[in-house]
Image (cartoon, rainbow, N blue to C red):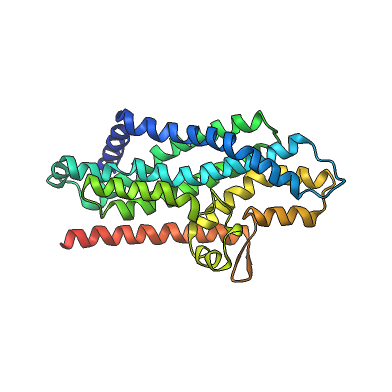
Length: 297
């Protein structure tokens, strides 16, 4: 346990001591927030306003709360995964730069080293994403604030779960990488593609039926839907209380992936949680198998 703690702290310190990687991880969510608010804010606002039946008056505060909630959910759904890959790159850079060789001759088991990388990646990512959540909540407070303490706790829970998923996924993939070129390639693919396939950049409901069915097999789809539900729950309640028919509200929810189905069967929030937990456990099992295969090799 002592060796695990020492190695975990060493890895966390190594991540935060590399100013370029840490600042990139921290600044990226802030840049995305500015870009989302600047370029997508008006589009989201027009979409929500257009969905309201003619003759119904809905305050700008509620519309802006819906917009900021969508931006918050989209940004954090992506950040939890991409930052996990960035913080977990230490596993690869140690191989490339040499520290891994020193650790291999030390009296520390491979399982302890791998667990230390995973835990360090998790804690480092959580810190960055909590800062990102704080930035998003500050932005939301300037637009339209309807959250209570329960909403914030649920969002924090989503961040923890998505970060665990991101760290488990990045551990499985990064374990196989052996060069800086491979790291750059994987980071570019994840950064550019994950937001689309998880429904953060564009709702999956706007994709073709075939693509929707394919993406319904990916755990990230349900992780994004979870955080959207919790980020938009309070604004949706205010929208209903303002007199908008529940049928209209449900249609808006479906268009934003708050309501998902798997081959015609509705997926409840409890099932979404279960899918994410199973995915995390499955990835950790794969990570353990990778370590055992390495020892045998």
